[in-house]
Structure formats: structure tokens, C-alpha cells
Image 1 (cartoon, rainbow, N blue to C red):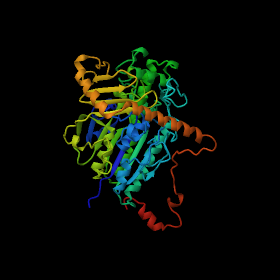
Image 2: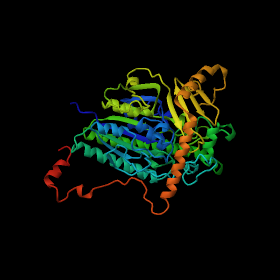
Image 3: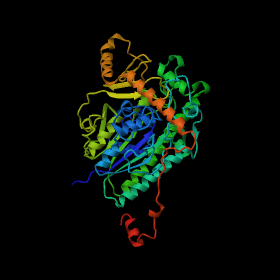
Image 4: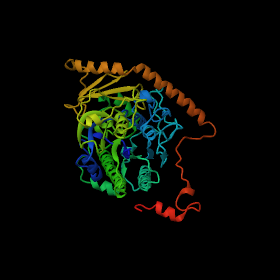
Length: 501
């Protein structure tokens, strides 16, 4: 039997996919990602299934949209009976391990991973649940606000830097353990960082790389509040924009720190890949983000939007049987799970009818893709679910509260001109309407989100009354199994723990 390939997945957080037109943009100081891009199939137009952390990650892992996996927002439980790529690979004989963030909410903090090396950076309970019944309510203690922009700059340590330093350290340590082959199974290691997610604060050495950067202002300047579409106005309100004055210097510092943190990530990823090479191990390598960041375009920041900066993510896959090159068809993060299983030769027949993603191998090998890419959003800054479709350079969005949107991305890459009301585009609009009608019952979707929110608010209030036992993952270390202990033979231990022997 041929050994199944090892798999190394790098996931980053809030990385704008428009900065990866064909690998990293030329102005980014990213030698390691550039090296990876040179041997990868690069999916230029990859869209998140949902532009927020927990929904985007649950969709990436399951191949299901939020309306199917019920992870609507950053406080929605990811149910244990939904298989993930970690389940599929583990059933097929893989050892599966996670170092870093996946923003699991609920008592199941593994979702198919056999081992987790770190805790998560964000809470695992229902405390961040939005409330569609209170559309004007802004929850200050956990909603984003513009302090991430006005406070941008330099620091040697932050909450986020401390976390990602730990993620990289544990990933390297695990790769050394894998090289010693005390477990001979093939492996899948997911290394998931929180950068370049705001706050926009970077270490000096990376900040200095962008002193002369000419991309520190967005291409599309801030619009007046009244000139934004209704959902963008809701995002502004959720981000508490009225209590902040954003200057050109604030914007430049925030973007500079963001670019600097991409270089910080590049160094961390490079160190992990160097450890893989130093131990003579081979693996399929996947690089992806959960969603993007608007970075001040149109005055918008962070995510929560279907605009390109928020919804597009980088996706690169380096695998022996995939030719390196650029794919320009639109694809989805929903496609990662079926692609991983296909690359590993793992059948998904039992659950294939429910998975909404599809393997990217045929597309990478030249076969055209026919169906639109689907997106959903039903979290903070929304008062009803939004859905979107992307196909052949067109993007369509729908929400029962808002006018439809239709953009020609080839002619209008910054999505400045909504074409939905123009008669000359009526046929294209109707095509997307028909597809959306088949795919979604928006009233039912809205009802299910509201019911979920109500249940979680009730449960959270109950669990915070009296003794509280949160679900935050506690990494376990068995001290009696580390290093030298008296139930071990020192001679065997020293030999077994040495690589190369």
C-alpha cells in the first residue's frame, strides 16, 4: 500500500486576497510565501464562504455554508456531528493536529483533530451572540471599533504577537516529533495564525520594511456615510465610526502595520517550512485565509462585507500532482475540504451529497468550472442574512432588507457601480436571481438565525449565573511522558528522540 501524503495547512486570519493577484503582490516583503507560490497552483479569485472568523472557518473545515452548518456568527456552536477534513483524514488513518486558532464555539473543541497544541485566542462560549431583535444595539465590549485604526503602530509584544509566537513554536516542535516517527501514520498538521487580523500593531523590524511603501493609502477614498449601501452603513454603525476621527496618518499607519504583519507571518511560515525541510519530510502545503480586510477602501475596515477586500482570500496549494500555475476561475474556501480528501485519496461518498464544495483538482488541471461561488453572512452588522454569488467576473448580492447589487468585476474591480437597475443587464440579473431562488429560502434562513440567537442568549444567561465552566480549550501536557522519567530506559529514549539517528 502506498503511503498517503502528509499535509501541512497554513491558515492566516483576515488576509486580503486582492494582495495576492498571483502569489504575494510585488511590494510585499514575503520571500517564503513567494517561494511557496512558485511551486503552487494559485487560485487568484478565492472567496470566503462567510466573511467572519468562526463562520468562515467552520465552512472551510466542513465544506458547508453557514445555513447548513449553523455557524452563523462568532458565538454559534459548531456541532459535533458535522464532519470536517480532520474527521475525514483521521478515519483514513491520518494523525491530525492543530496548532493555533480555529474559533470553535461549544463544548467540542477538537472537531476531528486528535491533538491541539494551543488554546484559542478567542472565547468558546455564547457571549458574542448578536441579536436580530435589537438592530440598533451596539455591544461595545466585543464589537469591533475604530480604535484598531487610530491605535495602529509599533510594539514588540501584543496579545496577538504572543499568540502567534506560540503557534509557530508548537508547530515546529510538532514537526520535529513527526520526523522521529514514533507514530508511523501519515499526518495532517494545521498551523493557524491570528495575524494580520487587527489590531494593526507590528514589531519594529517588520514595520521598518514598509517605510517607503507607496500603498499606504487605499485606492478608493472614504465615501460619505449617506453614499454607502445599506449594509455598509450598518458596518459603520457596528464599528462605532461616529466616535472616531480617522486621519490620513491613521490610515497609513494601519495599512503599514498590516503589511508588516504579513511579513511577520512570512517569517513564521518560513521557519515552519524550514523545519520540515531540515527533517527531510515532504508534505502537501496549503496556504489560505478565513476572510479578508477592507483596509480603508471606501472608508470600510475589517470584514463583514461581500466587497472584494473583505470576501477574497489567498489560496495556494503545492502538491506533487498539481501543476504550478495561476487559476483565474472563481473558487471557494468550501472547496478546500473536498480537495484535501481528493489529494489524500480519501473517499467522501457517505457525506458527499451534503458537501457544498467541490475538489479543485480538475480545475487546476484545466477543466472549467460551471457553478457560481456562494457566500453567506448572518452575523454582527446584519439584521437579516445576506447571500452572494460570483461567476465569470460578475458578483450578485441579495438581502431582503436591501436593494440587489450586481457588479461587473472585470470592468469595475472596486465595485463602484451597481448595475442591478440597468435594463441592459436584466438577463444577467435574472440568471443570478433564479440561481439564488433555487439555493436559498431567505425567510427560513432568517427564522433559523433568530431561533439560534434566542436559544444561545438564554443558555448563556443561565450558564453565567453561579459557577461558570467555560469551554475554552486547555492544552494538556503529560509531564510524566516528557523528557526523561524513571519508567523509561534512558538509552532507548536518547536514541529514539534523536533525529537523524
